[in-house]
Length: 489
Image (cartoon, rainbow, N blue to C red):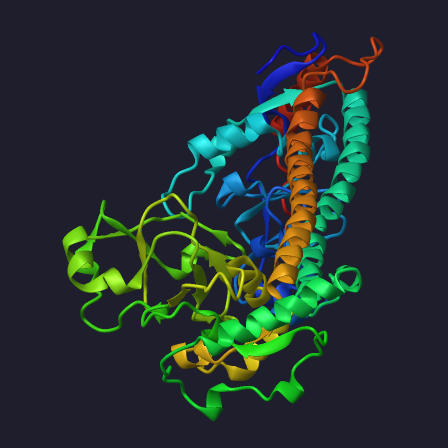
């Protein structure tokens, strides 16, 4: 512990309060409107009560601990979660919560803030016993460190912390609310981009380019050779029921935008050929659902296929860079990203579709943005099947309707989306940095407060040593008083 003012005293929690001394409440003795506090009602690390319930709602059959308004309620189970509450009303709580009563020596709010201090948290984390559900023992709680300040200064510290931490708690949800706003912003950008609204002004000033692009697209479509086996009408969507697109755009089937190759659109193999026993710590990376993020390829938790097995069975399901990856499973499925260039060959599992895009007809990044848009998700939800988990199959994917702009406009859409997303990414990075700074504020303020640096000292305050001496004297006098004899009837 860092140095503290000379009028303060470093002592033990059990020397200043009666830690572990509780008043039990039997279920039959609890009134229906009594507040019942359980550990799950307390948000970890914030001292916030998430939910208030009374006994008539909970109907608990176990014994409880009684507490009064002004008591400090400390969660001794998994104490590293720092579940501490300053009771604003009386009630009962689970026996895994220890009510601690303030007294003439210790201010309740001061005690409440100390139990959230990084030093106290480090102590209880170290001395708790139990593996899966560690618990702070009563004697260990009494031996916990406690910094005793003069009584008047305790109140000044508590008042100041209440004021500052209230501001911190106001800022936290505002910063946390930025991420959902940015998520909605990105979705709005994608919906606008893939319906033509984002480039409406661009089309007005590039009419001649669009006319030539339309001719080029028709030539490319006429060059498609061979027949692709699809599911038929069940996998198709009536274009009349789709969202409106500009006159210079066209609805095409997804397979019309793939390269002319038998494995241009495919997923990994089903069956016994894809076995976990073939996984290795090195080899060809395997692309699972967890690796396909929304617009971003993720490398977390890598697994590898034995190179010899890959060469023998899995080369048709390989990607080398630039391919479109789309999830077959999800809620809903259809999350898409581009497999990055320059990181080597990998292979997809049966739950991930890979598509080699014909770059003359479509920009793979435009298709990625479309599949990640709400426009695509609405179509997918009308096509996908499954009970416990929704899925799409290869036939659906091949015949999936794509709102296709001319190739030059696709490039402009991708450029604008990238620009707007880069702006959102910068905002998100700043919000994350601000969130990290705010998260550090509470422990920093607590540390400063209990070093005596938050409020000025008053030389007229009674020193902490005198407070403790007076408490011990009062305790000794109470112990020396003879017990009163009970009168017999």
